[in-house]
Amino acid sequence: MKTQSNSIIAVVMFVALHMSVAGAPPETVKLWSGGALPKAAEIPILSGVRISSIKPHEPETDGYQWLHGVGLIWHKGRLYSSFGHNKGRENTRGEQARGSVSNDGGKTWGAVFTIASGDEHLGVSHGVFLSHHDALWSFHGAFYDDFQRTHTRAYRLDEASGAWKPVEIKLGDGFWPLQNPVKMDDGNRIMAGARIAKGYKDAAGNLPAVAISRGDDFTKWDLVVLPCDDSVSPTSVWGESTVIVEGARITNIARWTGANPTALISESSDFGRTWTPVRASNLPMAASKPHAGILSAGQRYLICTTTADTGNRRSPLTIAVSRPGERTLSKVFVIRAPDSSERIGLSYPCAIEHDGKLYVGYSNNGGRGGNRNSAELAVIPLSALKAK
Image (cartoon, rainbow, N blue to C red; front, top):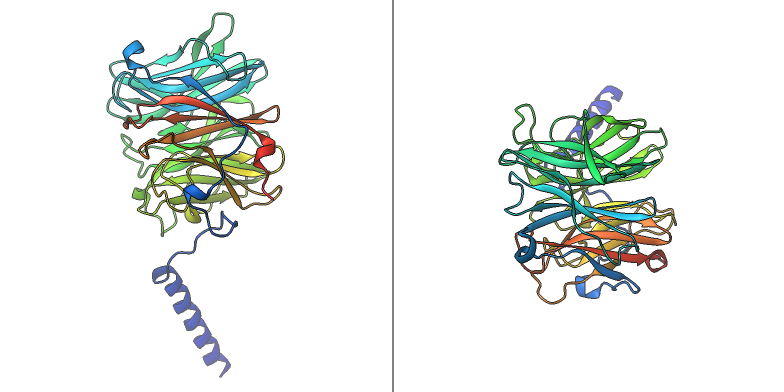
């Protein structure tokens, strides 16, 4: 009887497991714990936010139609920005990495400079910054021809001449960096991004990925591509991602292009070396590049468009925050609402904390579509982000 009982239990457990995998809806990861997520019109707009223009959309003056992917960094008391710029269409040869610098905390910006230019076969686009000791680094997504063989290119600022000098680096194929490298407790830095497969015969899917430095040597990085859960089709993932770093535990939040887009989640407990399969979370998030982190007050935050009713529309630009020390988000605020038309897109945020404020860079298409954006900056007092 004991043997028969054990057999029955084993069969029941097998059937239950099989049903949970094959028949039942996949369980989501809990990212949101704030009750019913509010609709866009119900979300409070942050007070005390200063909005300024980094680079307006002015093709009649400079000939540039496309702009996207604002990057920000504070370096030696100055606020630097970068962005991808193109006189033609997005992700086409000739794309450039450009930027500007502010001496007054982002209120006004100097002339646009070029970090790197593409050519008839190469495009160099938007990227991220790293300030280390006296050096300012910039890492950018680049590609050949019609968005083939994506890779990362690195540059370092020669402050005496103001020129950006290319630096040869080693990093795996297909990586596009999307978040400033974050230092981890093991002494390495982790840079979130996406691995784009097009043009690489041994790669499949445009998946979330991270690059891990070898200490303070920023010329050598280890690429780790995140696996997908069976419930998430790799073809529905456009792996633009961001990370939250908390000791050895790293949380990756990535973009999903499904019909009902939500934030995708994967976690690592060994400083980003191995990851749980990417799964859907319980937080709706428009299909756009997200940005996340932990504020000095101990609050986790996620910037994108997270509302109950906007679906894939890239507005309003929101920030969801946790209570200090908590791992789930529970309060959402509007950083920037569209001025009028619902066609306006506010997207691809980046953020950096400095002197009691959160500096958020983002794209504003002004209703023009096609990522014919201007680059804007929102400066948020940290006191406005408290979640009670």
